[in-house]
Length: 472
Image 1 (cartoon, rainbow, N blue to C red):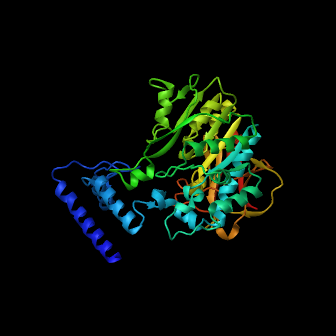
Image 2 (cartoon, one colour):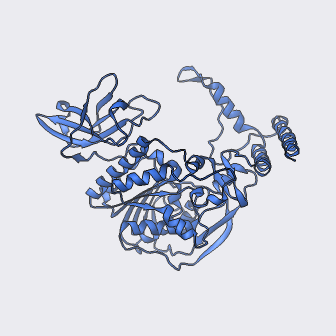
């Protein structure tokens, strides 16, 4: 039986491979699938020199330009997923029609990041919390769990869930550091036990109901009064085309059920982006399955109270209806860097940092735009700028930036890194983010032993500063 299935699959696949070449003469280039960038013909010369990547770039261009590509991918994935149970286009076909992202499988089976890497993520959150609370604002950090964390029973056979992964280790560090952390995993698992479906079958994200429970857990963690939207009427419509469904079956993605809540937006006003017609229409566009124009969203709502700054990813987008209805003013951003300059200016009451589980490692991809907090009574190993330790000191926008990569033999898994600045005999010590400035240090990969500190208030005394790095 298995041999027959393999022969059928091979025959169909080989036939499909011949179609594009026959169609190339009469058909225009194919459009992209899922979240791919559009195909672009490579240039022979780049920056005045022969393009040494032309082979790789042309291969990418040709692959994305094949006629009938969405139809071919759909047919291939339907066959291989249904007959062979394999991963296709980074999408796993699970049980009962559930799809899962291939990016989440490492976390699921327990292939986790190094202890130092996870420690760095936790320390980054701790420093962020200290900076935020020092300004008199509330802070919450939360992680949106991967779909297979909540619904492991629908994963394909052969995948065994591990008891320990990056998130579970991170949670231990967060507890030790006394981070105001909201466990959405615990919240959603408790709700799931009541029979509720909280994630989209053909998407990596939670549905509107899951987002509502996530919103309520975050609001409770902030410790302020809030609108829970308990008892709010909703409808369920089978009209959502999920991100991984479109990747796996670009020509015929199956729709899945989505929750839509009946909320009053009559007083809501968008400051950014501007509504071309009505606020309801703009919110509908922002909440669609296209994920467009949602990098920065600023709203005012006289019916709400308090103010919010939330740095979030695509999971946070599903919470938009509740956030903009609850808060009088909201700044909702989706950027690579946690940027509190807006909060510095407007003094937000609540600050939330949300990250999806499979992207925890990206917490230390970009240095938060925050000045390094001052530390007291710090002692440890002093590091010199030598062949094994690379330390860079420079002026950046009137502030002093100190960054580098240290010899890993000098840094333990739980070491913290500080920067001592001595001017005219007076010393001040600042805590650095355990994040590598890859561009400044001209390194292609971030290091678990990198650090960055942006120090303000030195003015014209920067040139006199004696800088020393301390590892505790």
